[in-house]
Structures are given as C-alpha cells and as structure tokens.
Image (cartoon, rainbow, N blue to C red; front, side):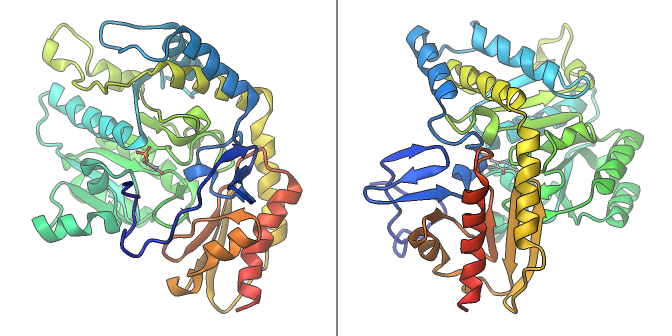
Length: 400
Ligand SMILES: *Cc1c(COP(=O)(O)O)cnc(C)c1O
C-alpha cells in the first residue's frame, strides 16, 4: 500500500483520486477543481501544456535518460547554457540533481568543501533562519527550523552545527560580529519563507546579508526552490541580490518531472578547480541531468520568457490585492501577499479544519497546513478563476 507524506496513516482522510488534469484544473471521476496549490508550487504553466508535453514526448522518442558520469547529451548542455545566460552575473556552473532537497544538500556540501579545499577547517557551521524550510533530507532538515526535526532533537539533543536567526538586521549583525569565523555559509529562502508559514520579509535584510558575507568571507546561498521562476513577483530574488550559490527546483521543469539544480558562481567553482583530485565535488545522483527533465525545463524557461510571465504574475498580484485588501475577521491574525502567493494566517489552527473539503465542494483544491491557508496558483490562471479561489477562501470565514 501507499505510505502518504506528512500523514498519520491511521487518521488520514482519503485523498482525492485524480484521473486527468488540464490547465489549472484537476479532474476526479466526477468533478473538476482549480488547483490553488500548483502541485506543491511547481505547475506554473498549468497541466498538460501542449508545448511541454511535446518536448517530453519528442525527447522520449530519442532517449529518456543516460547517466552523466562519463556521458553527456544535448538537452543537459542546452539547459546549462540557458541557465548560465539567463541567471544573473556569474552564476554559471550548474550541478543537476533529482529533487530540491538533494540540491540543497549539494549546496551545503559545496559550501563546506569550498573551505576544506582551502584548508580552512574551522568553518563547520551554517547560519540559517528561524522558520526556515529547506527540504526533508537530513542536513536540509537540520538547517531548516520546523517540526520535522523535533524527533531528531529528542533523540540527539541540541543542534550543533546550525545557528538560526530571525529576519532582522540587528540579529544578523550581532551573529556575524560574534561568530563569523565559524560559518561556511548563510542559507536563506529569500523574501518568502514557504513551508515555514509563507512569511515575507524585506529585501534590505538580504542586502545587508550580502555585505556581511562579503566582509567576513561567508558564502551566501539562496534556496529559491520555492521562490524561483516568479513566485515573489521577481523572476528570481537573485536578480536583486546575487548569492554565491543558487538552488532551483519545483517550477524548474514546470512541474512535469522531479529535477533541481545547484548553481555556483565563479568564485565557488574555482574553489574546486585544479589538478588535485581530492578537490573535486564528490556527488552524483543517478538521475542528475535526466534528458526528459532537461528537455522540458528548457521549454518551460522559453515559455516563461516568450509569454512574459512576469506581467502575468504582476496581474495575479494586482487581482489578489484588490480582492483581499482590507479583508479581516476575528479569527485571522494576518493576510500576507507577495507576487503569486497569498496567505491567510489564522490565530488557531483548528479554524482551518474542514476547509479542504469546503473548498473541494466549491471546485477548488487547497491544502492548508498548521495555521496557514494559502494559494499559489498556476500563472496561466484567468482572472475569473483566481477570483473564485480567493472568494472560496473568504467565504470560509464569512460563515464562521
Ligand atoms: C520544496 C522545497 C525544498 C525541497 O524540494 P523537494 O523537491 O521536495 O526535495 C527545498 N527548499 C525549499 C525552499 C522548498 O520549498
């Protein structure tokens, strides 16, 4: 049987069984619903996009996968070239992997080994944010700051190698002044912390982080697995403040197939480059650079550019602000909006219990978690469909 994610299997409610999907719609046997979650924020072009489906089909007719150890191919070369050109500055060196969590592991390994390669063995710690989420594998969980790690803390005691700070400039300056020599990197979800509760913060924090990282020789890592490809209203937050290492996933393939990339700048790449074999980056996921994933990712980026997704996202934000501005209720703590993300945080998580079924009955798929009801819609959504999603969110409170 299937062991479902994040669920107590004993009390889990039966999941909706999907039989087809097209555009922003998911179809069950007898209903259709707008996917307001974009399948964990990845399906930015909607489902069954003809251009993306064709890209995968025609690649499958040639070959679906060959390993990247000792072999290479056109789709991975084209995607790496495209990313190098498309991403800001000298973020040019692409290490592919099969999921966001693994790409984060690779970034953290890169940052540590960068210093070990320089024979600097003191920089063993990672600076990270409170409420951070960076994936579910062990090191990614450790730099994260949520429930996932609590059982590990119970088993092992305190975290030894990660320091968490809030998104406040004062806290940032203090921790750098006190401990900068211990850090190999500072990893953040820039501007928007997703799974930690759709928390939004100001770019001034990242600008100050960039200065301090430069001043004290700490690598700055942006985990844009969730924020990349327009979710914050910026193409990448890395366009505003440039990190040393950038991690992309989720929307990279338009949600068609799992793939991710860790992109390093010239300085980081150079820390591994040389005649010494031991300086090489010792990592290599079996399915890295998968040809189907690369072919579809390349087309996804082309669509994003050709069809001016940034203005689509701006429009989503305008409509969302229009519909949600001033929306209040005694049970709501805060309504937050940024780009293609809106979150209604309630004071008591119990007040969201039953919302998923309520939304389903009104033709919207939603997946609230803890105190957070949110929408991160596919960018191809129409105004009418988006208004419907937002109205269902508001209606839930009007009957309470
Ligand atoms: C989802 C997510 C990850 C993990 O990606 P997976 O593909 O689920 O492993 C890492 N970082 C952030 C910010 C994410 O939102």
